[in-house]
Image 1 (tube, rainbow, N blue to C red):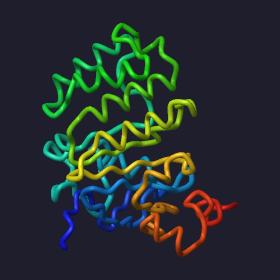
Image 2 (image 1 turned 90 degrees about the vertical axis):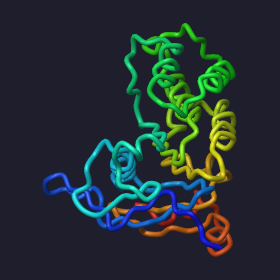
Image 3 (image 1 turned 180 degrees about the vertical axis):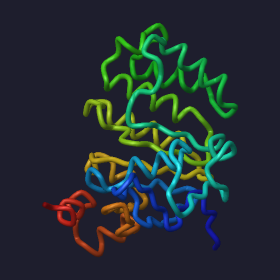
Image 4 (image 1 turned 60 degrees about the horizontal axis):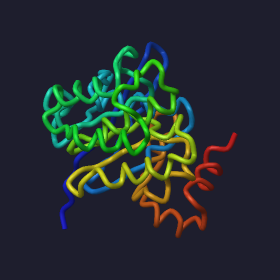
Length: 234
């Protein structure tokens, strides 16, 4: 059975002067997969996601999203969660929902308000008065309230307290369809691996390995977290 490839990188390079952030990275992600993008700091994860979201330009190689290179169309079908707050801090949560509703035709404001309420984020709460973790939860709610073909999440659990992580994981799992693909970068592998279908290991800007989680566990006799610690140990 032929799989529909939603997200693909072909020999992707990104250089900043003499520094190489991506070094020929290649992979393909089919529809219906939740994929962990794993690697130590400086391995190229955020650079890869920013290129895919259309925020950076590659030095060489190609990214394809739904068969097209990053541009107006791919931005319309890609829901991207950056690794830091990008909304004006004077905005209230309700303002952020309205902004997304105006900007994205696939955005479900009702779903966003329901998720915010579940996380005890009030419509009148001002972004600047929220903790870092609450800001991250709000941005994730906005990101997952789109009916996108590709979700790119950069450290979605980074500042989230352990008590909220299960809800966040369920939010991620419930809100992307079998026609979409979801790729997330994280250092909290133990918290997220139970939800992953595949993992992509990055090292020094190159894809060291792409493998199904079940196959990796069977082959190595280790969890993804244990395997990661062994492969990348100092």
